[in-house]
Amino acid sequence: MSTSTAVQTYDAAVIGAGFGGVYGVHKFANELGLNVIGFEKADGPAGTWYWNRYPGALSDTESHLYRYSFDKELLNDGHWENTYLTQPEILAYFEDVVDRLDVRRHFRFGTEVTSSIYLEDEGLWELTAGGETYRARYVLNAVGLLSAVNMPDIPGAETFDGQILHTGAWPEGIDLSGKRVGVVGSGSTGTQVVTALAPEVTHLTHFVRTPQYSVPVGKRPVSEAERQEVKANYDQIWDQVKNSAVAFGFEEATTPAMSVSEEERQRVFQEAWDKGGGFRFMFGTFGDIATDLEANEAAASFIRGKISEIIEDPETARKLTPHDLYARRPLCDNGFYETFNRDNVEVVALKETPFKEITPDGVLTSDGQLHELDVLIFATGFDAVDGNYRRMEILGRGGEDINEHWQGQPTSYLGVATSNFPNWFMVLGPNGPFTNLPPSIETQVEWISELIKYADDNGIKAIEPKQSTVDEWTETCTEIAEATVFTKVDSWIFGANVPGKKPSVLFYLGGLGNYRSVLNDEATAGYPGFSLT
Ligand code: FAD
Ligand code: NA7
Image (cartoon, rainbow, N blue to C red; front, top):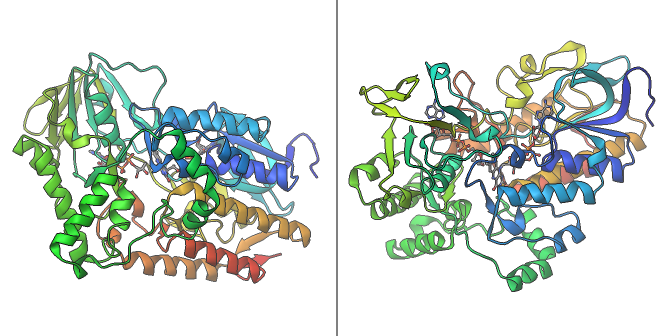
């Protein structure tokens, strides 16, 4: 199908080699028979898990569900030691998968795509990657929703004599033993890195701006019998996951928190606390923690009680106790609060004593205290969802820039495509599902793949959603989001964590089961939401 001239031309270009990109290349090349090229900035596959090599990096989806479901053999050969996967395990999984699927040869690793420009007359996209030019009929952006790092701009950073690191771009072979380390950020990543590093370093200073609610992750070894049990039941397990809301492998609760007695509420919270898992605590205990303020406060207050029980020093506990809503992506940890009972760990509450500047010797806070450091780690998260799109030049029909099109508030139809950008698809684009992500990623890649096949089978040259459909989807996502507590708190879920970024609704919070029904209806009806030219 491809022709080779001075510019290399392909049927499809895939950007990214994480869950989305690897599966995209497999579907397009091995199943649709397209001539495919993949681009990945990193020197190897795994996406998120290539970059996030920081100590303590762990999935918060259980091991048997943080993987592809589409390949029975891959599932049966799967191995996991514990209930959650460490970063090296996921990296090894991807190294194996790209060879099993024979997709490594399609990828150009160490190659960043800097622009994608639609050539309307040719009906092709022209990509610049690693300084070379390529053309392709279809583009699949699998560039990651938590991938573009957010690095705060703190005065004096360039004067620091020590080392500055970001968890999302962690170099290999860093040894922090015997060092004085500062960790900025108290999200999922910050809690993991603090917990893992505290026993290794001489002194650890945790700079906390907004304390969060965290419950135990529940990491424990898995026996061979348990693995076999999962493997024997995988069909039912995936069926349940894909028809559930958050896709984490448990049944979401429906009972309202305040409909039971105080004693029963505490029992249910305690059971979830003992079992582990942030999503289980928020969605598996009661049905209205994410939607009802009183229910939310009941869960929040249970966790606050645990923090004051676990942390021995009341002043340290105070600094780490949240008082706002329990309304961010729910955290879980592997002994975070216990870590603050160590003598070599201290907390700086940045809302009380903000950063003044970074000096050659460490970090100076507004109270005049110099926190002397050898290494300063930023666990400050990501420019989520559209961050990587804004770091490329992307011009659609009529030369329209994606950033002008989105006006800082990215939109799409179904999280997979947007109007005026024909044959240009996204994995986990704006307003895609908010879930355990591999099953959502698979759902999207499979659906896009079918749409491309439909277009090819029907002689369709250009596919793009209608603006009216994009508007309706945005409205649907906004309505659902506004019915939850999530909109009431600033976090990356709404793009409210990066200075200068306009907050907007970035997810479909209606659940994977419902999302799959919407996709199915759209395909069965012959794609009425799309212009098929
Ligand atoms: P990614 O894995 O982010 O891959 C995108 C790739 O695109 C990257 O490798 C990037 O280098 C590449 N890329 C981007 N732009 C370009 C460009 N211009 N040119 C070339 N290449 C480019 N989700 C869960 O469901 N459960 C979890 O337990 C979980 N844990 C997480 C822990 C951490 C520390 C982080 C950061 C995220 C976690 N996530 C988790 C979310 C995670 O991002 C997704 O689960 C999943 O890995 C996303 O896969 P992806 O293929 O869409 O994107
Ligand atoms: P998050 O959840 O965005 O957390 C980032 C943390 O960094 C959070 O505590 C922020 O405080 C803090 N932060 C960000 N900027 C600053 C500045 N300038 N000064 C001080 N503190 C700052 O990112 P994670 O990497 O932990 O997790 C993201 C997702 O990736 C997670 O949900 C998993 O899915 C994996 P704030 O709350 O903004 O006050």
